Length: 210
Image (cartoon, rainbow, N blue to C red; front, side):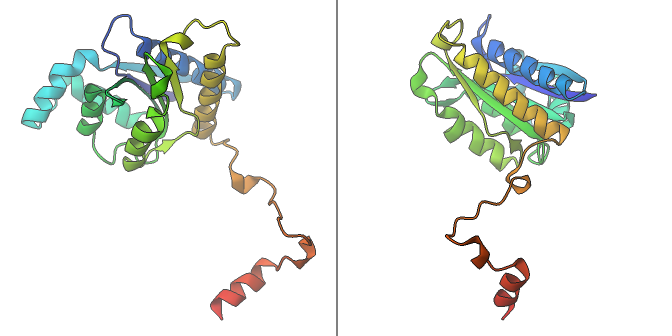
């Protein structure tokens, strides 16, 4: 059983951030099922944990509910993390949660990142804010991050958001199941004019060792 922790930093109810998180989780579960793997999803809403996070920042101790949420994330096989955009970055509550988690807890964990905002002008927030934070935590962030502006939900123009969600979910499932297509498995592209002039690997190593 693959355990997926889904973290939603949405503050409103209903929340577009939770909606995007649910869509990403569903896409990942479907893609894992296509690979013959069952998945169990734990959704962690940060809004009810706001006071616990503030208490932990002040005292250094996590109340029971927050400790349980941190344990679920630390022990998950994969994480989906979605934040609303505040002041051109992730929300303070979202950052507080990842400040509270052990700095080594996500090392090597596959992570899918997403963000929501009222306008598409914040679409790069996943790359300049979320991805660097998870890189610092040594997580394995899948290539496709999903940003959704308010206009993306319910759009009838080709279902572009649905395509991005499906692609990101498939990438996370591939990493979790160990079937990711890495460049090392692809044919080597020879860029010189005459491929026969390419030296063999032993010769290249010999030239380096002198």
